[in-house]
Length: 403
Image (cartoon, rainbow, N blue to C red; front, top):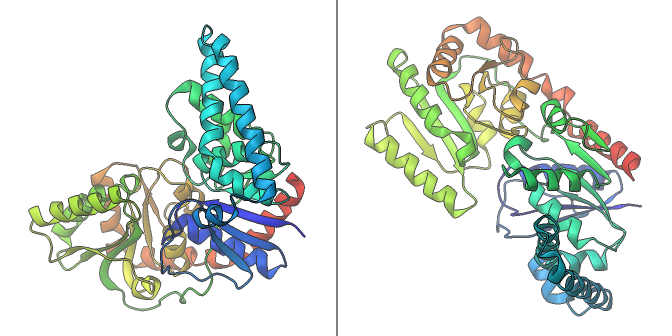
């Protein structure tokens, strides 16, 4: 029986840990051993539950109790020896900048992945699924010489996720080509790599379980969004577009339920609140704390609006569609919105960073009751096409093929 380990950064309320938990839960139901390995911080409370057979492991705590294990000490000894050899070679390679840069990167990667090496040394027979390129790189270096299998899970638009530096971008793509497999979220992501990945498959995100049923009736005049507060969400675009929309629809309000994980996101939230205050729009534009029952709160709103510049495949958009919310989304990099929405059929797509286009689409959705109803009914079909059971089965089939 394979032991599958999802590697994530923070285990807090957010798309990545929720997606990892949804898959791990379903894998556990199907008899697989599942672990979510958290390399950074863990929140005391999250809005999603994990199966009793899913282990949530803090890497920091694991390292503190297993650093002196025999397998770990042997692995670290080998890595330290390799670092010494690479440093010695650099006495020669310093005259050849290309090779010197490669060696310096390897040394840095081996050092940076030291904590992950502790876990992998004790668990070499697992299948590791790092969510995001930085975690893949760490797992790649930490697993050297252990025989561990690695399947990379893309979580964002790769053209943005990967560095602009051509050398670094090609280095990381070359590393990805050595993975045992790659799971991408959209066709756009697959096309970005242009056949440079040996084993790659597209699997969309699943719809989480236990969502409320789609609402049928007269909707509240509330435009809603629930997301992590990050620059990529481009919330100022949403706010400015709503201001335009509000001129002709003064009885509507905007509610943004924003989750913050990093300090930079707290700072962004403060900036957005200040922006709203400076425009004297606090009465009808609100940034509110995240809540566990957000789907029950949102289901009878007029529409869900996403203003992102780039995404992998937005979980909040998928959930909004699943509860039958009429959706207006920017056709952002990564192709997630385009992958899910057929314009005018189950939602509306607008160009990125276009305030006027977004405002006009909101007006269209608010004013055309037949369109709103059609988009709501068609969007909710995602509940059947993207059930977590079927998405998890696609993952497991791919894992079996990859390894």
